[in-house]
Structure formats: C-alpha cells, structure tokens
Amino acid sequence: MMNNPVRKFFGAMFQSQQTQQRLPISSEEWHQHWQSQGQCWRKEPEIDEKRQLLHHVNKIREANPMLGFRGCRLGLLYPEVTRMQCRAIFEAACQVKGERKQVTLEIMVPLVSISEELKQQAEMIHDVAREVTGELGMKIEYAVGTMIELPRACLTADKIAEHADFFSFGTNDLTQTTFGLSRDDSGRFLPAYVDRKILADDPFQVLDREGVGELVRLGTERGRSVKPDLKVGICGEHGGDPSSIAFCNEIGLNYVSCSPYRVPVARLAAAHAALAAEAKVAADAAADAAADEDAKAREAVGASKG
Image (cartoon, rainbow, N blue to C red; front, side, top):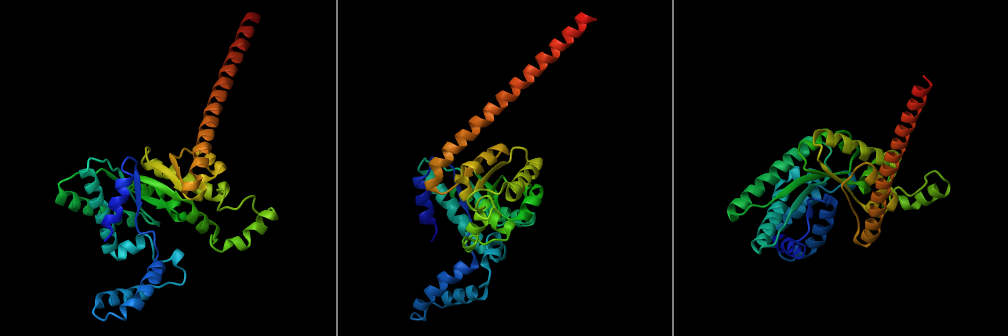
C-alpha cells in the first residue's frame, strides 16, 4: 500500500540524501481518518476487518495527543506499523537502486525520550532491512537516527547516541515541551508577551537561546561525547530564521532543515554565519599574533636594559 508513493518519491529525488521520518502521526490523527472512513464501512458489512481496526483506533483516542500515544511509542506497542513503513521504504529504495539510481537513506525515529525506545526500534528497522535486502539480493546503505524533541532526550543524549547515527533536534516540539506552550493556541497571547517585553521574540519563530538553545547545545555535546562525529542538525521553522541559523553554526551543528519557502533565506543565512565565523577566527588569530609580537618586543626591551 505504501510502496508506490515512496518509490515515486525516491525516483524523483534519487540524487539527494533522503530522510524518512516514521510514525509522525498521533493516534488522534488515526482516529479522525478512520472515523471518517467508518461511515462508508457501515454500508459494507463484509469488511469486518476494517470495523475491527476502527474499534482499536477508538480505544486509543486521547484528550491530549500531542503528549500522548504517538511517535516511537506507537511503533513499540504496534510493531507491525514500524515494520510496514520500513518495508515500504526499503523495497522502494531497492527498486530505485535497481534502476541505477543512488538512494542514501536516513530513517528517523521520532519522539524518543528513553534510549531503550530507540534501541528497540532500531533493532526492528535493521531486521526489516535484512529481510528486504535478502529477499531482493541487494545492499542498501542507510542510517538510523532520532528526532530530539523532548527535554529528557536532550539531558540523556549520551545514552540515546549509543543507538543513533544522527540527531535532528525538532525545535518546534522542543519549544512546546520546554515552555509548556501549545504552538496551535499560544498565538492568542504570545504577541502580547512580545509587546510587553516579557519575551524578545516569538519562540516559535526565533529560537530561544537561553532555554531551548541551551538544551540543543547540551544534547549536542552529550551526544558527541559518545560519538564525536555524530551528525547533528535542527528540523523546524527555526531552520529558516537567520539568527537561529547563526546560533546553530556557533554550536557546531551540521545542517538545518526548514519549510521549502524558507530555503533561500536559510542558505543565505548559513553562508553569512559561516563567513562571520571565519572572520572571527581570523581576527582572533591576528590578535594572538599581535599579542605574541608585543610580548617578544617587551622581552627584547627588558634584555637590552639588563
């Protein structure tokens, strides 16, 4: 069912590196989809299997799905969801590779807060990869990483990194969970906070360096304490904000990801940040050289007086 659209995606984008995020939806989104489908099923009594599926979806409906049964949690309790998505991804990648097109996969597991969650999901992904590549007689290069979008994940990033090939900080949700704000509802009062100077900027538009930014810095440092070459970036609207990009460059992130319409601004901001960093390094080196010359001159004067 999923194979055809994934295969078309890879076919269109084969020359670039693709990151597939599994399980981004919540059980509430499942509920809304299957509830709408249920109206049709009542007219077709022979499809009992779909009725049973709707019954299960109704059982896991939640009042607060944003902090509920979604992301890797869904895949851990319903492993068939993880296996289905990964099989579709690997089969599509093998098909496209068979057309002599290169696909480099990055599979990202979302909403991880406990290292064991990623460990178990990664094991399942590797298992499906072995099954598919064995069946098709092909080899696919891929990486398994995680979306860091919860404060606990930042604090325990050293443990999570043991099972990750890369980190992507989901700064939209990390901002929500750090501030305790709903991005969908906070627009009713955040403008007043900015007007009254309680906040300098809307934290969903400009990365909050003191809070969210420090968690990103800490998570990066702890992750790289285990894997020095760990690839780290951010994913969210902050990836298109120039000041946020400058901060990411400052703390040594490898990339930013943002909405398509923000890409031109993001590229320009990244170039500016890189140039500013190079200029600072050159200025610091010049200052150090001048200090050394001054010290040598002082020593020479002292020696001549002696």
